Length: 376
Image (cartoon, rainbow, N blue to C red; front, top):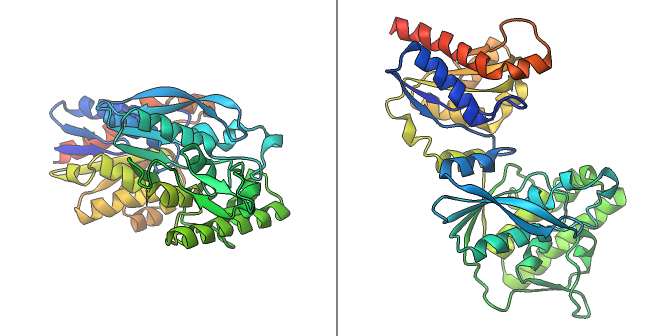
Protein backbone atom coordinates (compact mmCIF):
# COMPACT_ATOMS: atom_id res chain seq x y z
CA UNK A 1 0.00 0.00 0.00
CA UNK A 2 1.28 3.45 -0.91
CA UNK A 3 -0.19 6.66 0.54
CA UNK A 4 0.52 10.21 -0.57
CA UNK A 5 0.15 12.91 2.10
CA UNK A 6 -0.67 16.40 0.76
CA UNK A 7 -2.10 18.56 3.56
CA UNK A 8 -2.12 22.32 4.04
CA UNK A 9 -1.28 23.84 7.43
CA UNK A 10 -3.62 23.73 10.43
CA UNK A 11 -3.43 27.46 11.14
CA UNK A 12 -2.21 28.23 14.67
CA UNK A 13 -1.52 24.58 15.41
CA UNK A 14 0.67 22.77 12.86
CA UNK A 15 2.49 23.84 9.72
CA UNK A 16 2.09 21.61 6.67
CA UNK A 17 5.27 19.51 7.22
CA UNK A 18 4.16 18.94 10.85
CA UNK A 19 0.75 17.76 9.63
CA UNK A 20 2.54 15.28 7.37
CA UNK A 21 4.60 14.06 10.33
CA UNK A 22 1.47 13.47 12.41
CA UNK A 23 -0.25 11.66 9.53
CA UNK A 24 2.81 9.50 8.90
CA UNK A 25 2.93 8.62 12.59
CA UNK A 26 -0.67 7.41 12.43
CA UNK A 27 0.08 5.32 9.35
CA UNK A 28 3.12 3.70 11.00
CA UNK A 29 0.86 2.70 13.92
CA UNK A 30 -1.12 0.65 11.38
CA UNK A 31 1.87 -0.88 9.61
CA UNK A 32 5.50 0.16 9.10
CA UNK A 33 5.33 -1.57 5.72
CA UNK A 34 3.00 1.03 4.22
CA UNK A 35 4.92 3.32 1.88
CA UNK A 36 4.39 7.02 2.67
CA UNK A 37 5.18 9.98 0.41
CA UNK A 38 4.91 13.36 2.15
CA UNK A 39 4.25 16.42 -0.03
CA UNK A 40 3.12 19.23 2.31
CA UNK A 41 1.15 21.84 0.41
CA UNK A 42 0.02 25.48 0.54
CA UNK A 43 -2.66 27.39 -1.30
CA UNK A 44 -0.29 29.86 -2.92
CA UNK A 45 -0.56 32.40 -0.12
CA UNK A 46 0.89 32.38 3.38
CA UNK A 47 3.38 29.56 3.90
CA UNK A 48 4.02 28.86 0.20
CA UNK A 49 7.54 30.24 0.12
CA UNK A 50 8.44 28.55 3.42
CA UNK A 51 7.44 25.26 1.83
CA UNK A 52 9.46 25.93 -1.31
CA UNK A 53 12.43 26.57 0.96
CA UNK A 54 11.65 23.35 2.85
CA UNK A 55 11.55 21.33 -0.39
CA UNK A 56 14.82 22.82 -1.61
CA UNK A 57 16.65 22.21 1.68
CA UNK A 58 17.57 25.86 1.82
CA UNK A 59 18.01 28.40 4.59
CA UNK A 60 16.66 31.81 5.44
CA UNK A 61 18.90 34.87 5.27
CA UNK A 62 18.42 38.50 6.28
CA UNK A 63 19.00 41.71 4.33
CA UNK A 64 18.61 45.35 5.32
CA UNK A 65 16.13 47.01 2.99
CA UNK A 66 13.58 49.82 2.93
CA UNK A 67 10.07 49.23 4.21
CA UNK A 68 7.09 50.68 2.27
CA UNK A 69 7.79 54.15 3.69
CA UNK A 70 11.55 54.06 3.18
CA UNK A 71 12.64 53.12 6.70
CA UNK A 72 15.45 50.59 7.05
CA UNK A 73 14.30 47.18 8.28
CA UNK A 74 15.62 43.61 8.29
CA UNK A 75 13.78 41.37 5.83
CA UNK A 76 14.03 37.62 5.43
CA UNK A 77 14.60 35.78 2.17
CA UNK A 78 15.70 32.24 1.36
CA UNK A 79 18.36 30.53 -0.74
CA UNK A 80 18.10 26.91 -1.86
CA UNK A 81 20.71 24.42 -0.71
CA UNK A 82 22.40 24.42 -4.14
CA UNK A 83 22.52 28.22 -4.19
CA UNK A 84 20.71 28.40 -7.54
CA UNK A 85 17.27 29.57 -6.44
CA UNK A 86 16.19 32.44 -4.21
CA UNK A 87 12.82 32.68 -2.48
CA UNK A 88 11.40 36.13 -1.78
CA UNK A 89 8.12 37.19 -0.22
CA UNK A 90 7.44 40.80 -1.12
CA UNK A 91 5.45 41.29 2.10
CA UNK A 92 8.71 40.97 4.03
CA UNK A 93 9.87 44.29 2.57
CA UNK A 94 6.74 45.95 1.17
CA UNK A 95 3.92 44.40 3.16
CA UNK A 96 0.90 46.01 4.77
CA UNK A 97 1.76 44.30 8.06
CA UNK A 98 4.87 46.51 8.33
CA UNK A 99 2.76 49.65 8.75
CA UNK A 100 0.64 50.95 11.58
CA UNK A 101 -3.01 51.60 10.75
CA UNK A 102 -2.48 55.36 10.49
CA UNK A 103 0.53 54.89 8.16
CA UNK A 104 -1.38 53.04 5.46
CA UNK A 105 -1.52 55.20 2.34
CA UNK A 106 -0.66 53.76 -1.10
CA UNK A 107 -0.02 57.28 -2.41
CA UNK A 108 3.10 57.34 -0.21
CA UNK A 109 4.30 53.72 -0.27
CA UNK A 110 6.78 51.98 -2.57
CA UNK A 111 8.02 48.50 -3.50
CA UNK A 112 11.63 49.76 -3.44
CA UNK A 113 12.53 47.33 -0.64
CA UNK A 114 11.34 44.37 -2.71
CA UNK A 115 13.67 45.53 -5.47
CA UNK A 116 16.49 45.67 -2.93
CA UNK A 117 15.80 42.04 -1.98
CA UNK A 118 15.94 41.07 -5.65
CA UNK A 119 19.21 42.99 -6.04
CA UNK A 120 20.63 41.21 -2.98
CA UNK A 121 19.96 37.70 -4.29
CA UNK A 122 21.14 38.52 -7.82
CA UNK A 123 24.46 39.61 -6.30
CA UNK A 124 24.70 36.16 -4.70
CA UNK A 125 24.69 34.57 -8.15
CA UNK A 126 21.31 32.83 -8.14
CA UNK A 127 19.86 31.67 -11.45
CA UNK A 128 16.19 31.71 -10.47
CA UNK A 129 13.96 33.73 -8.17
CA UNK A 130 10.57 32.54 -6.95
CA UNK A 131 8.67 35.55 -5.69
CA UNK A 132 5.42 35.66 -3.73
CA UNK A 133 3.49 38.92 -4.01
CA UNK A 134 0.62 38.76 -1.51
CA UNK A 135 -0.09 41.22 1.29
CA UNK A 136 1.31 44.39 -0.23
CA UNK A 137 1.02 47.91 1.20
CA UNK A 138 1.63 49.45 -2.21
CA UNK A 139 -0.03 50.57 -5.44
CA UNK A 140 2.99 51.67 -7.46
CA UNK A 141 2.91 49.35 -10.52
CA UNK A 142 6.27 48.02 -9.34
CA UNK A 143 8.16 51.22 -10.19
CA UNK A 144 9.71 51.24 -6.71
CA UNK A 145 11.02 47.72 -7.24
CA UNK A 146 12.31 48.68 -10.68
CA UNK A 147 13.96 51.86 -9.35
CA UNK A 148 15.99 49.79 -6.89
CA UNK A 149 17.29 47.83 -9.88
CA UNK A 150 18.33 50.85 -11.92
CA UNK A 151 15.22 51.94 -13.81
CA UNK A 152 14.41 55.66 -13.76
CA UNK A 153 11.02 57.34 -13.94
CA UNK A 154 11.23 60.90 -15.19
CA UNK A 155 8.78 63.80 -15.09
CA UNK A 156 8.07 66.34 -17.84
CA UNK A 157 11.30 68.18 -16.99
CA UNK A 158 13.43 65.05 -17.15
CA UNK A 159 13.79 64.97 -13.36
CA UNK A 160 13.82 61.60 -11.61
CA UNK A 161 10.72 60.98 -9.51
CA UNK A 162 10.43 59.28 -6.14
CA UNK A 163 8.84 55.92 -7.10
CA UNK A 164 5.69 56.10 -4.96
CA UNK A 165 2.01 55.81 -5.82
CA UNK A 166 1.19 59.52 -6.02
CA UNK A 167 3.91 60.05 -8.64
CA UNK A 168 2.62 57.46 -11.12
CA UNK A 169 0.66 60.07 -13.02
CA UNK A 170 3.65 62.43 -13.15
CA UNK A 171 5.83 59.95 -15.05
CA UNK A 172 6.46 61.03 -18.66
CA UNK A 173 9.41 58.81 -19.56
CA UNK A 174 10.70 55.42 -18.43
CA UNK A 175 14.47 54.95 -18.69
CA UNK A 176 15.92 51.42 -18.40
CA UNK A 177 19.19 50.64 -16.58
CA UNK A 178 22.29 51.66 -18.52
CA UNK A 179 24.05 48.33 -17.89
CA UNK A 180 21.64 46.01 -19.68
CA UNK A 181 18.12 45.76 -21.03
CA UNK A 182 17.97 42.05 -20.22
CA UNK A 183 17.56 41.03 -16.59
CA UNK A 184 20.02 38.17 -15.89
CA UNK A 185 17.82 36.03 -13.63
CA UNK A 186 14.61 34.11 -14.35
CA UNK A 187 11.80 35.28 -12.04
CA UNK A 188 8.68 33.21 -11.46
CA UNK A 189 5.91 34.96 -9.55
CA UNK A 190 3.43 33.12 -7.32
CA UNK A 191 0.30 35.08 -8.18
CA UNK A 192 -3.21 34.00 -7.22
CA UNK A 193 -5.30 36.98 -8.26
CA UNK A 194 -6.51 37.61 -11.79
CA UNK A 195 -7.08 41.37 -11.72
CA UNK A 196 -5.75 43.53 -14.57
CA UNK A 197 -3.53 46.52 -13.80
CA UNK A 198 -6.15 49.28 -13.98
CA UNK A 199 -9.87 49.82 -14.47
CA UNK A 200 -12.84 48.94 -12.28
CA UNK A 201 -11.38 45.51 -11.54
CA UNK A 202 -7.80 46.75 -11.35
CA UNK A 203 -5.29 47.15 -8.55
CA UNK A 204 -6.46 50.56 -7.28
CA UNK A 205 -10.22 50.06 -7.26
CA UNK A 206 -10.24 46.52 -5.87
CA UNK A 207 -7.37 46.60 -3.39
CA UNK A 208 -6.59 50.29 -2.82
CA UNK A 209 -9.19 50.90 -0.07
CA UNK A 210 -7.86 48.11 2.16
CA UNK A 211 -4.42 49.73 1.90
CA UNK A 212 -5.71 53.08 3.13
CA UNK A 213 -6.79 54.79 -0.11
CA UNK A 214 -9.91 56.96 -0.06
CA UNK A 215 -12.09 57.49 -3.15
CA UNK A 216 -9.98 60.38 -4.45
CA UNK A 217 -6.75 58.45 -3.94
CA UNK A 218 -8.17 55.39 -5.72
CA UNK A 219 -9.05 57.49 -8.76
CA UNK A 220 -5.60 59.13 -8.82
CA UNK A 221 -3.83 55.79 -8.46
CA UNK A 222 -5.91 54.18 -11.21
CA UNK A 223 -5.04 57.01 -13.61
CA UNK A 224 -1.41 56.66 -12.61
CA UNK A 225 -1.37 52.92 -13.26
CA UNK A 226 -2.89 53.51 -16.67
CA UNK A 227 -0.27 56.18 -17.37
CA UNK A 228 2.61 53.81 -16.58
CA UNK A 229 1.11 51.11 -18.80
CA UNK A 230 0.64 53.52 -21.72
CA UNK A 231 4.18 54.91 -21.46
CA UNK A 232 5.67 51.42 -21.24
CA UNK A 233 3.73 50.33 -24.32
CA UNK A 234 4.79 53.47 -26.22
CA UNK A 235 8.47 53.23 -25.24
CA UNK A 236 8.95 49.46 -25.32
CA UNK A 237 6.17 48.15 -27.57
CA UNK A 238 4.68 45.71 -25.07
CA UNK A 239 1.18 45.86 -23.59
CA UNK A 240 0.78 43.85 -20.38
CA UNK A 241 -1.85 45.87 -18.50
CA UNK A 242 -4.89 43.67 -19.18
CA UNK A 243 -3.14 40.36 -18.56
CA UNK A 244 -4.69 38.51 -15.62
CA UNK A 245 -2.60 39.02 -12.49
CA UNK A 246 -0.87 42.25 -13.51
CA UNK A 247 -3.00 44.05 -10.91
CA UNK A 248 -1.66 41.84 -8.12
CA UNK A 249 0.13 43.56 -5.23
CA UNK A 250 -0.80 47.04 -6.38
CA UNK A 251 0.44 46.40 -9.90
CA UNK A 252 3.67 44.68 -8.90
CA UNK A 253 2.54 41.80 -11.14
CA UNK A 254 2.69 44.24 -14.05
CA UNK A 255 6.01 45.68 -12.93
CA UNK A 256 7.66 42.29 -12.68
CA UNK A 257 6.50 41.33 -16.17
CA UNK A 258 7.38 44.69 -17.72
CA UNK A 259 10.67 45.52 -16.03
CA UNK A 260 11.97 42.04 -15.10
CA UNK A 261 10.44 39.86 -17.84
CA UNK A 262 8.95 37.66 -15.11
CA UNK A 263 6.38 34.88 -15.51
CA UNK A 264 3.18 34.96 -13.45
CA UNK A 265 2.02 31.55 -12.22
CA UNK A 266 -0.68 30.25 -9.87
CA UNK A 267 0.90 29.61 -6.47
CA UNK A 268 -0.61 26.14 -6.16
CA UNK A 269 0.55 25.16 -9.65
CA UNK A 270 4.01 26.53 -8.92
CA UNK A 271 4.29 24.49 -5.73
CA UNK A 272 2.93 21.32 -7.36
CA UNK A 273 5.43 21.63 -10.19
CA UNK A 274 8.25 22.32 -7.75
CA UNK A 275 7.60 19.14 -5.74
CA UNK A 276 6.79 17.02 -8.82
CA UNK A 277 3.33 16.26 -7.42
CA UNK A 278 1.97 14.56 -10.53
CA UNK A 279 5.05 12.38 -10.95
CA UNK A 280 4.70 11.23 -7.33
CA UNK A 281 1.21 9.81 -7.98
CA UNK A 282 2.65 6.63 -9.52
CA UNK A 283 1.34 3.50 -7.74
CA UNK A 284 -0.39 5.58 -5.04
CA UNK A 285 -3.45 3.88 -3.51
CA UNK A 286 -4.73 6.80 -1.42
CA UNK A 287 -4.20 10.55 -1.12
CA UNK A 288 -4.77 12.20 2.26
CA UNK A 289 -5.11 15.98 2.32
CA UNK A 290 -6.45 18.33 4.96
CA UNK A 291 -6.31 21.69 6.68
CA UNK A 292 -7.53 23.41 9.82
CA UNK A 293 -11.02 24.13 8.48
CA UNK A 294 -12.82 22.69 5.49
CA UNK A 295 -15.73 24.90 4.46
CA UNK A 296 -17.18 26.48 1.33
CA UNK A 297 -14.12 28.68 0.97
CA UNK A 298 -11.94 25.56 0.91
CA UNK A 299 -14.08 23.98 -1.78
CA UNK A 300 -13.72 27.08 -3.94
CA UNK A 301 -9.96 27.27 -3.35
CA UNK A 302 -7.29 26.29 -5.81
CA UNK A 303 -5.39 23.86 -3.56
CA UNK A 304 -8.18 21.33 -3.03
CA UNK A 305 -9.26 21.64 -6.66
CA UNK A 306 -5.69 21.12 -7.85
CA UNK A 307 -5.32 17.97 -5.76
CA UNK A 308 -8.75 16.52 -6.53
CA UNK A 309 -8.37 17.16 -10.27
CA UNK A 310 -5.14 15.17 -10.37
CA UNK A 311 -6.55 12.44 -8.08
CA UNK A 312 -9.68 12.05 -10.20
CA UNK A 313 -7.66 11.90 -13.41
CA UNK A 314 -5.39 9.23 -11.88
CA UNK A 315 -8.41 7.40 -10.36
CA UNK A 316 -6.99 7.62 -6.85
CA UNK A 317 -9.37 8.00 -3.87
CA UNK A 318 -8.81 11.10 -1.74
CA UNK A 319 -9.53 11.62 1.95
CA UNK A 320 -9.45 14.85 3.95
CA UNK A 321 -8.68 15.35 7.63
CA UNK A 322 -9.41 18.69 9.28
CA UNK A 323 -10.07 20.50 12.53
CA UNK A 324 -13.50 21.83 11.57
CA UNK A 325 -15.65 20.13 8.92
CA UNK A 326 -18.34 22.53 7.74
CA UNK A 327 -19.56 21.18 4.41
CA UNK A 328 -22.18 18.66 3.37
CA UNK A 329 -21.48 15.17 1.97
CA UNK A 330 -22.90 16.32 -1.37
CA UNK A 331 -20.45 19.25 -1.52
CA UNK A 332 -17.54 16.91 -0.77
CA UNK A 333 -18.63 14.56 -3.54
CA UNK A 334 -18.96 17.40 -6.01
CA UNK A 335 -15.37 18.51 -5.46
CA UNK A 336 -14.07 14.92 -5.61
CA UNK A 337 -13.31 14.13 -1.96
CA UNK A 338 -14.30 10.56 -1.07
CA UNK A 339 -14.00 10.82 2.72
CA UNK A 340 -13.60 13.59 5.27
CA UNK A 341 -13.45 13.73 9.06
CA UNK A 342 -12.70 16.15 11.86
CA UNK A 343 -9.92 15.36 14.31
CA UNK A 344 -12.03 16.64 17.24
CA UNK A 345 -13.42 13.72 19.20
CA UNK A 346 -14.90 15.68 22.11
CA UNK A 347 -15.99 19.24 22.94
CA UNK A 348 -13.00 21.53 23.58
CA UNK A 349 -12.17 25.22 23.49
CA UNK A 350 -10.00 26.74 20.78
CA UNK A 351 -6.77 26.73 22.82
CA UNK A 352 -7.18 23.05 23.66
CA UNK A 353 -8.08 22.23 20.05
CA UNK A 354 -4.92 23.91 18.77
CA UNK A 355 -2.78 21.98 21.26
CA UNK A 356 -4.54 18.75 20.26
CA UNK A 357 -3.55 19.14 16.60
CA UNK A 358 -0.74 16.57 16.37
CA UNK A 359 -2.51 13.92 18.43
CA UNK A 360 -5.79 14.47 16.64
CA UNK A 361 -4.30 14.27 13.13
CA UNK A 362 -2.32 11.18 14.09
CA UNK A 363 -5.35 9.39 15.53
CA UNK A 364 -7.73 10.34 12.70
CA UNK A 365 -5.21 9.09 10.15
CA UNK A 366 -4.76 5.85 12.08
CA UNK A 367 -8.52 5.15 12.17
CA UNK A 368 -8.87 5.77 8.43
CA UNK A 369 -5.83 3.80 7.28
CA UNK A 370 -6.40 0.96 9.74
CA UNK A 371 -9.88 0.41 8.28
CA UNK A 372 -8.58 0.42 4.71
CA UNK A 373 -5.60 -1.76 5.55
CA UNK A 374 -7.70 -4.45 7.20
CA UNK A 375 -10.15 -4.51 4.31
CA UNK A 376 -7.44 -4.69 1.63
